[in-house]
Amino acid sequence: MCTCLHVVLLSGRSAAIRVVADTTVKEVQSRAETIFSTGISQLIDAAGQTLSRASTIREAGLQDGDSLNAVARWPEIASTAPAFALRRADGSVVTWGHKALQSSCAAFVALRTDGSVVCWGAEDVGGNCSTVQKKLTNVRQIQSSTAAFAALRADGSVVTWGAPDCGGESEAAQDRLRNVKSIVGSGYAFAAIRKDESVVTWGNVADGGDSSAVQEKLKSVKHIASTDSAFAALLADGSVVTWGASGAGGDSGSVQCRLKDVRSIRSSAAAFAAILGDNSVVTWGCGNCGGDCSAVQARLKDVRRIQSNDAAFAAILGDGSVVTWGSIRHGADSSAVQDRLRQVQHIQASTEAFAALLADGSVVSWGTGAYGGDSRAVQEELKAVQHIQENGFAFAALLENGSVVTWGDAENGGDSSAVQQQLSLTAWDTQMPSLRKRRRIYGKQPATACNTPAGR
Image (cartoon, rainbow, N blue to C red; front, side, top):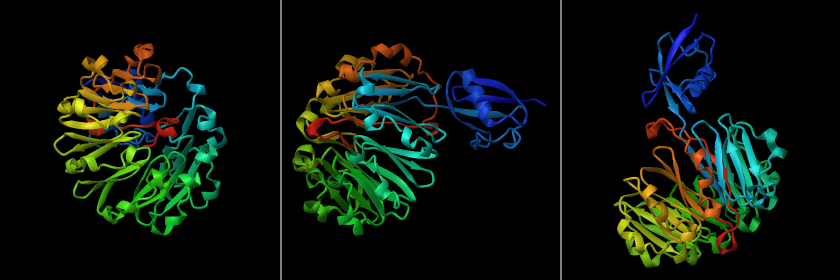
């Protein structure tokens, strides 16, 4: 006996799909994707429950005439220096940027919805995961260093590949890489937080791969931030423990007495900035990379969020204004656009520039023009912007209608004219933000400023 189900997108578009009792929800979803010509992340029944893709119509308790709400996939832009990748609503991927991507110091890793992994790009920096492919199942998270990747599986184990001296080899730490809940990468090493809130590190010893000097302090760890060559761990009591290269933030001795009631930590390539419970800021590390905020300390009040690039920081205050510090070349001087930096919702950063998304969907950029600091050529197109991505050299803005606007270094992603026809096919049915479900495509950046790889 056939059952007729009505699959409805939030926009109002609907499709009647006839099924039998043993038809799976996955098959219904697949048929709906074909009809709507758009990807669907989940189907929700009348009671508001997300249906398991493995369930049959009978198991889901669906009856003839029932309606299902379909949540369309949100197109997502990911990046690796010097290129961009856009996952379209139908699940396909469009890439643009450096023409010699396969031979450049760049690699992409895509995490599929079934937990499997696909790699491509330069083999010596992680673009080839064939040696560990069989282990890359049920993957929940992927992190990268300059030339290696680390994948966290659902069972809490970790799989690594890429350059050994950048964390691609983790054999010495494998006996401790159990019950891991999150991973953080620096330029040359990785740090994993286990479920008991202890920490395991591996990779280049001088750049944070060896935490033995502070291991006894690394308890009740809630979060870890990293520069290119150091790590900073935020503990449950609001204190901070650092290790790695001292000049890159691995030594916080000069500000340790002030690192109390810390709520969050942000990093540049060689410095850290911590937001305290009173919304003030403490910085340490390389002064030229933002480790010294004394010039703007008095203005750093009611700080809500901080963004950073290789050598500068930008803080969004409670009133939507912005305070910047660090290297002038990298965007520390925002005076030319300060009158426009109002009602800022989010800031994205390339290697030497910033782009701020305002409440009205417009964008303000500053810093080195060649790195996206000058968006005047596309300013009229930057309206109804939903998301901004960067790849170290350029910016790409995803608009409300699904189209993409790019600016910055033309050869490295700032010019997307060669793929505009493909990018114009990214339209999707508008969904409520709370219903958007994303899957990540991960990328890494090669060496950039200060003769060290870009860190985040």
